[in-house]
Length: 245
Image (cartoon, rainbow, N blue to C red; front, side):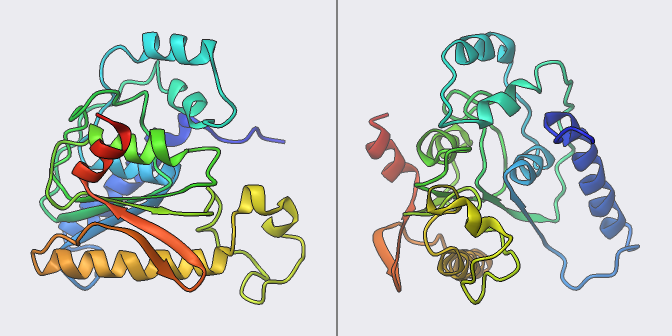
């Protein structure tokens, strides 16, 4: 049996993504539209950030030594981030066709620890959940928003009761069936009402992109609700006040 893949596959994923972007730019990939939105979940979100031009800040090894001495099981993304210590990432050539990045359950607290470390010229929509034990929202999505170079269109969508696995659609989920899928793991890992969470994510992502296409920043809004799902859309100033930074 092969081990579960980790950070070592990031370069492969980045290479695959760059090949697709290059094929579209050459006209070999026939898709409608001129602009590109890169969307990724977890490691895919990190791949999207790298594709947009971000590279780890110097000193990752020292930051990892401190982090792993006091590793919390409520932020497993630190383990993956520290697998990147010996990998050399070249800054990607920025693709003018990229319109935005949608980063679901993203992370980067060790890669970009200070404000404005991650220099990405495109709007980024960060998405997280309050039940996420792998990429916790406070340190990974909200912290990451502050680590991005300031942009009026950056936003963070935080969904109450959502977990790292809430965006994952599995067999039997639409009918809320109990079966051989993620529901066997329980709400503490799967999160509350994953189908409603997925509907909320889809709706809010579409709203964000529609506003962006019109050149308008989606308004920040705390304590929104979709059926039984509560969520918040935060801008940089909201996050600064929340984190006291």
